[in-house]
Image 1 (cartoon, rainbow, N blue to C red):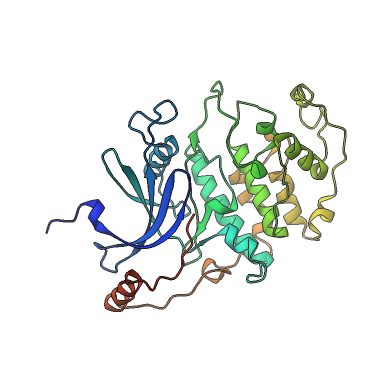
Image 2: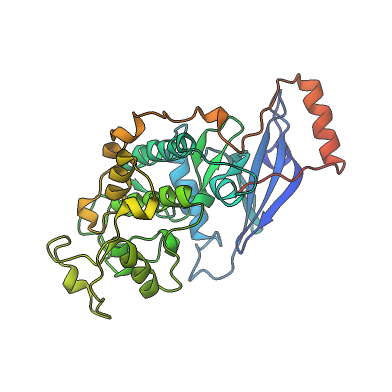
Length: 343
């Protein structure tokens, strides 16, 4: 039996959001026996070929397609399909995700995060990033908004619009990556040669945010971001970060002592403090890798990481036969649409 064209294969359910370059909505996959829900990111084509590709496709979309076609892992959001209309738009079809980590962190009145919950979230993040780094890929935009969760509580890394390959020591790379609050100090200083350690710093910021339920470093500019970092982690010495003095070309920072991490996070869990210390080490050459982080005692000690399906924010679903699911989809299409979250 002939299959539908990709454009006709998906039936829209609900509008989910709109950004500068894309619109996102949920849809039913009509070729799936269980009428699976997917998320479709419809990317607008641009007319400025100087900043976009010659075909008008936003460069971040090209990157996202490239890298997501190359990777396959349980902790990476899967790109299921790509289709488009000539001269109009291109659509990326993703597995549907129930929520994201930002939503869970910020809803303090709704979700309680236990140490075991936090451990599960960061463990899954490290497993996904370790896979990317083993395949010589930098994500370069890790933040809670881009850590998605499916209905089973499996965390999946999404949004590969700033991803790149690494491994060539002489390759010059842009510093205008990673949302500022999660950007490591070396990029704030303008270093153009870097590696996997930039993603590790971001994970340290996410772990701190899970703990405090607010971002730890909230600078209003690159200089202010460095000030916020040094106020907590201390101004590095030349011995701690060889070459640091040469980085202070625009502004010289006053020497500030590091605050004891036990006071910053108010915990006696030395294994947690050991991990956060190695993730948020100022000298990028001294940060632990994702593989090393996964072997820290933090993940082996009691409490053990929560099972994914028991994480807060995950709606439990009972098994349904296809006919029941179809009736629900028909109701949604007719206008009874429950708001779903996807970033």
